[in-house]
Length: 238
Image (tube, rainbow, N blue to C red):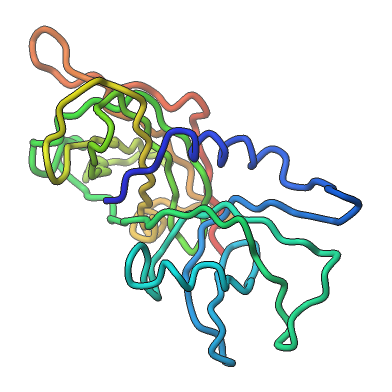
């Protein structure tokens, strides 16, 4: 999984609260948004995002090296609404920052325990970034050497009866085990919440969740979890 610089994650979080700005008398919107890189019907490269579809010519140089067609990404990009649309009817995105997003489906286990038992890396902090096409996007922060990568699991109790289930997020190192000075490392990950919705969605098409993330173990080796500070979280399904 591609490592995301801590500064990029901070930019995303800050952008969520203030997306509209005016620069040089132009109307410029900066979007933080999940997206998919695609070609449109006129064979132009576009970011198809929660915010809309935008031309993305500056990403041509990154194709097949940093990103591929069809990859799910989390992006921050700007659009100048004062400039005319293209002949095909699209605004153009620029100053695009993005990262490939890997995905998983939550797993039902007895008591919500880890499916494999080897997710032993501590998560320092999590942020919910967006919910789009049934995927819940997270930014996850670790204290780890620069370059260390992680993968994640989300579990819940297979016998859960509460209308607001609790899910547990755990992490483990991925790829090479990096050594060196510890810094803030941030990752993006998304979970497909479709299965949970089928089991727990209410009459208003809302899925309510309590989210906990593993921050370590105690002296007896028991897992220690922290509540996501904005619990309970609710997701609205279309």
